Structures are given as C-alpha cells and as structure tokens.
Amino acid sequence: MRQILSWALLICSIGFVLCAVKLLRDFGGHCRRDDMPENFNFENTVHLVDTGLYRFIRHPMYSSLLLLNWGVFLKHITPLTIAISVITTLFLIVAAKVEEKENQKFFGKAYTQYCSRSKMFFPFLF
Image (cartoon, rainbow, N blue to C red):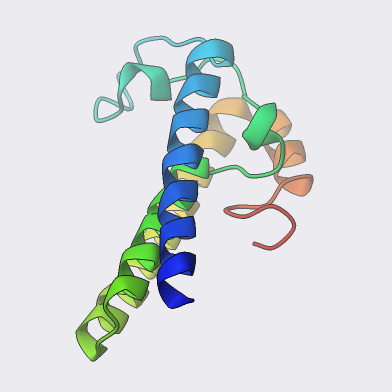
C-alpha cells in the first residue's frame, strides 16, 4: 500500500509541474524582469494566472516538489529520509512565503484577493 501511495504522489508531482508550466506560458505573458534574474522566462509573468490549477493553489510547482519529496520518502523510510523530507518541506514553505511577498509587491491588490480565494499548496487543504 505504501508503494502505491508513493507512486501516486510521484505521478501527481509530474502532473502538477507540467500543468503549471503550461498555464504560465499560455496565460501569464512574460517580460524581462531585472529584479528576478534567477527566474526562467515563463516564470516572469505580467498577468496574474488564476485559472486551471492556479484557480485552487498559488504554488503548483512547489506543490509538485512537495509531492515528489514525500513520494520519494515513502519509497525508503529511515530516520535520515524523515529528516530530509521535513527539512525540504520547511524550505519549500519559506520559499513560497518569500515568493508571495514578491508577487504581492508586483501584482498588488489583485494578488491579495487571489490569496483569499486560493490555498498555498493543495486545494481545500493548505
């Protein structure tokens, strides 16, 4: 049963990231942003994407990493993999919080409203 759950998380991880990238490319528009040189072009959107998966969650790419993280963890559970998975989760939460501040600054009130109607990582949960 654990392996089935692991594979389900891993498959969902792939689905989340593919969907997120497609939505950003299709609806986000993009421009060069000197304040975000570390981002890929498709990440520097000029339009707030709040359709598809983004309708329910603000960070589907981070969600994908969380699903990957816990899916891999379930493959081989040890004290070390527990520690790595918890630390990875904490880092992803911090990264998402930082990104939310950046998005708030860039998109303003529209992003605040979007946050009130969506979850950070998983629809209807968190």
